[in-house]
Length: 556
Image (cartoon, rainbow, N blue to C red):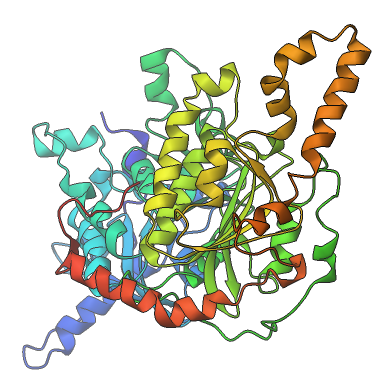
C-alpha cells in the first residue's frame, strides 16, 4: 500500500500549449525543453510536499539557491532531471516529477562555486525521489573544477528508502560510490554544508564530511536514523529535537556553528569561504584593508589582570589584535576551553587559536583537544598561517578527564600542531605549563616566531601546585595550619623573583618580550610573499590529477 508521502512532490502541472515541432528547425525541441524547465522551476502551490515545506516555515529549494548566491548567477546542471509525464492522446506535457536535488554553478561574492541543494518537498529527499548520479556527478565536478562546494541539506540527500526495494525488485549492498567523491572533495576544495531541516542518514554523513557546517535553531536536526527507527531499535520515544537538535550537535562538535535563520546560515557560509582559497592550489584571498598595520590598542596594556588568577575576555583581546570586525569564530558551543576562528591581518586571512580562561580555567580537555586538532588540520590544509595566542595552564585533570581520554586526544592535538606545514606566530599571553604548555607555546620545536607578554608565567608545573609537591615533607611537618601557611608563603616568595619572564629572556629561554600593544604582528605579510607560495607548489606536486595521492587525503 502506498505511503502518504507517495503523492508529495509528485506533479508540477503542465501548460495547455503543446510545443509544435515542424521537423525543420530546432525551435520545437527547444520549446519542449523550455516547457520542462518552466515546470521544474515553478513551485506547485497545490503540492502537499511544497505546502508542508511552507507550513514548517522553510524556504523552497530554489528560494534557498537564489538567497545564497549572487543575484542571477545560478547556472543549473541537470535542469530537467526527473520524470516528464505526457498525455498519450495529445502529447501535451501534463506534469513533471523533478529529481529531489538541484545542482549547478553560481557565484558567491563574485567567486565561482558549485552548489548541491536538496528538495525536501519531493519524497523528503529520499533516493526513490532522486536520480542517484546527480549529486555524485556534481561533487566530482566541483572538485575537478577546483571551486568550493556548498551543500544545502534537507532530508536524506538521496539516502536510502525501503520504498526503493519495490521499484527495483530487489535489495542491494550499499556502495561507497555515494560518498567517495565527497571524501575526495575534502582534499582539494573547501566544502561547506548548511543543515536546513531534518538531516538524516546519508545527509548526516555529508554534514560531517565537510570543512564547515552550520545548523539552524529550531529548524534543523541531525541523526543517523530518525525517531521511528530509533523507537523500533532502542525503545526511546524522542522528538526530532530531543534526538538531534542543535543543543546536542553544536555541543558535541558534529556541527560547527548555529544560525538563527536560513539567511543567517548562508551569511555564515559566505563568511567562512571568504577566508579560504578556491582550492589547495591557490593562496588564501587577500582583501583591501583600511585598518592600519601599525595600529596600537591602548586597551591591550590593561586587558590582562596583574592578579594571575583573574579572568579576562579572550574574544575582546582577539578583536583588538586582528583587523576590525574580521574575527569569525568557528565552534563556539563545543570544546569551549579552546577558541578557534578565522580573521585577517592587513587583509590577509589567518587562523586564530587561543584558550578561554573563563571555561575550566582554560585547561584543555578532550573536546578542546579534538577542536584544536580539527582546526589546525583545516588551516594547514588550506595554507592559513596561525596566530597562536597562548594562555594554557595544562591538560584538564581528575576522574572525568581520565574517563574522557583527555591525554589521548591531547596527543592528537600536539601532533597536529607539530606536523602542521603553515607558519605559526606564537604570542604567550600568560600561562604555559606542562606538556600541554609545551605543545602550544613551542609548537614548532623552536623553529617558529614567538614572543611573550610581560604577564608570561611558565614552567613544568604551576608554581603553587609545584611547591606543594616539591616541599610536601616540610609543609606537612609544620606545627600548625598557620605555620604551614606561613611556610608556603615564604617558599612562594622565594620563587617569585625567578618566575619573572624577564629572567627567562635573560637566558634566551623566550626570544622576545613585547609591549602587548605591539602584538598586531607584521609577519603575516612576509609569509604570504615568501612562505605560502612554496606550500602551494608542494600541494600541486602531491595531487595526482584532481585527486590526492594515496594516503594523502584529508584527515577528518
